[in-house]
Image 1 (tube, rainbow, N blue to C red):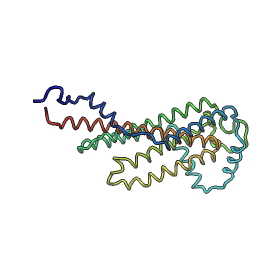
Image 2: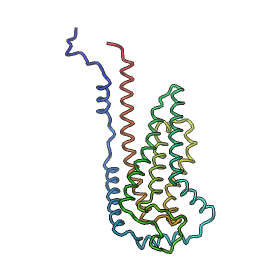
Image 3: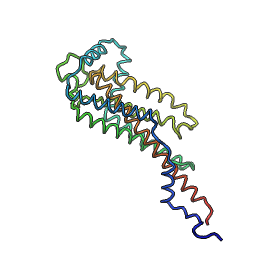
Image 4: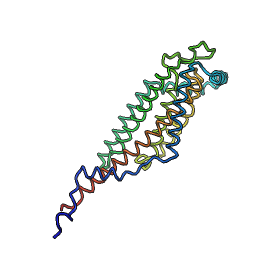
Length: 271
């Protein structure tokens, strides 16, 4: 007969949780960490200089004049207008709400079919959290830098819509990188990656890439932002996207291990 000291202690939710935390092995690699730190420093130093000199730099005016002097076909102009309008605050909030509801519904359908809905719910929370965090931090930079919009100093450029908001970094650019970037990330992770009809997503993946690449051009072409605003928007969106992807992977791995431990504890024979 075994002595009490040699018997294994019964598994409890607390011990299972601690064991799962110890088993999580999602660590940031040196290269992504270096990119994040370098991008953060570039964004912060740029914000300091732009705050001290809010007027457009010579390269800002030169690029805007060059871009706006290009004679684009009407369908290209319509596409540019669409990309800009689709990422205004109101449409963006509606789109995020649709993703939240849609992913939750897919998760509930998966549960009715006897599959785990957790990954679908995690995807819904992940996209909302990523866009919310990135937009919140971007807004903080916008308020601290306090750079006026193009046209505030009587520059001779074409401006489609005079907005009262500040200019640095470009909110549309930052939003698109974080939003569409995280959707692209999700499209290459389970359960989407293992979906039988995942080829249907190829046009949407292409749209995400095209939107990210063209949104900066559209902001300059429409006179909404300067080149330096757009570049800062790309850097801002990229570094916060990188950060959110890391934490998403860390948290979802942790949750998966907790569920695995609980399932093993529930299926284990009674002592």
